[in-house]
Length: 326
Image (cartoon, rainbow, N blue to C red; front, top):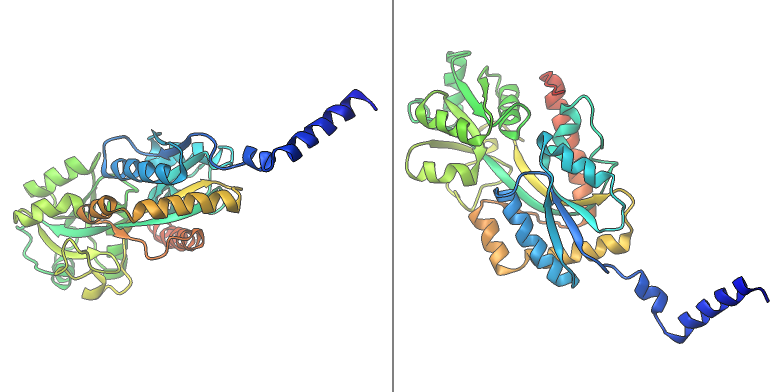
């Protein structure tokens, strides 16, 4: 018998002598998992990702480290994950930008939301809220629409930048309401909010967490929630859809994805770990305090279907408005 055959036989005998040895070698996870956040550290998205990573890591019996790869509205981090080995050790805390909007917004993209990733779990969504400066003489959405139509090109809305959900919310509003409310882009939420508070712009679609303190201090008036259902943070505030724009929904969603081609076993392990972490009381409290609406269904299939519907929705909005970024 040749030496090579002897070595092969010895290896097989070793596996038989130690039950489960071959299986143990493939057990997931056997090393640290990297959770990529495609945005800078310090924001609400990053904070939630870190807390979920801690909880899910404990469930998996390993460490999940958060790595921030910011830039290009989430594209840099998303492309990095899309090109990673599909073994479950590099995954992404994705949002509406890289997982739905950017594919229609950018001329060249190094990934595609529906084919470059393996869906793992939908976390939930953060509704936008329509707020106006108190000097704007309206109290609800129908009054705003009537006022904007009576004053074409005079009502303005601030956004955190072209292509952001705060921008596209206004595009969709104009399309559905038949208004001509002018877009004023800023470099970030902070400058946009400052000018809205100062009266330089009329209104904005911003997230509940950012707007809530100013609403409570009567520095901004809330007209409607840009979501499919009311928020626990402002239960008395009707949605924009409930005020005449049926189907209007502009929320930033969050989901866990990995590179395309991940095995069902690994996806199931990660899904169960993050789902268990979501149920922890302090994470539930964090979701509530940030105005995040938890997903009803947390299966990979649900996230895949949701991404598909969001890609189509924003493709239509962006194409009809002829919005493109380099």
